[in-house]
Image 1: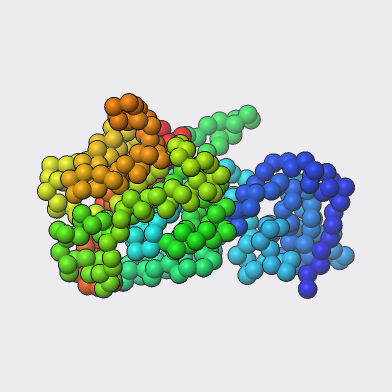
Image 2 (image 1 turned 180 degrees about the vertical axis):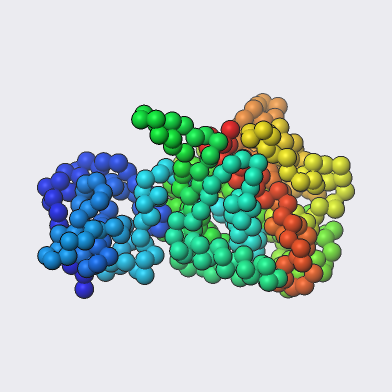
Length: 401
């Protein structure tokens, strides 16, 4: 049983009346004043409620330690840590969020994509970025998935339930600046990834609801193998291997988008039919299974990404990639899919042309080629354009130029 010390109760009451600096917990995505965060002393387990600046001394009799463990008052269990899972990292507390969500239906290859994308982002050299994990759980999760891939096994699909968030920090070394006293500072952000199962996104899991509600941009991950216009020309064995032995069923891509849009409008409390103005990267995974379609002959999307030039994003490349994928979708009879996106994420003029478009198509391959066996990964991992969506969103968020 943990001790609880109430420090500065009058100040705490005032803080409840007037929330000071707001903070969103990266575990439960509840928002509250930073002054409500609880601090736990690692020496004696005493919890201190102290709406003041760190370091916070433990006032438990005879201890004399410092309460260095930050706990979320909303997702604590029995007034204590849940094996450290709900500890708030200092970086997350003191840096702004890059608020975006990655959502997708089951079998979309989302876990593979997230794992490879993060690994490639940490190795990326065209922009000087420093990136790392903020929690042991984040590091262990990424390390385990990468090891599975290196041993020729695809990471297991996400189990529906209560996913553990992956909490990362990222710094842009190209935007270093001098502070007031001559010291240098580097823009640092926190971003959190919940790799929830597809059904979690569809059934309004409470944490997912708050996660999505707080987001200002989205990556929607879709498997092209669910599109009816694709399944007619993809080799059945390639499809079987990519779907881990399950042929699956074709899905109406329009319904996939509409379910996601309805979820977003419900969570955001918007009227039906309201255009969603947040940036949306629509990512078609497993591009290796469709890259040989005739519509992709002589296209840029087939080649390695050149999205960064002299440390800056080449927006014209992203625009060309979008147009090539859109033309392919029209070619295979997916105009309704495009119309569904236009009706929610684009503003059209009277002739039906885009006057403002908030979404962009991307095509990626986490492994670079289809697996040769069911549930396996390609023998040689050569990711294709996996960073395009995240770099596009970073540019939209002004994190990179």
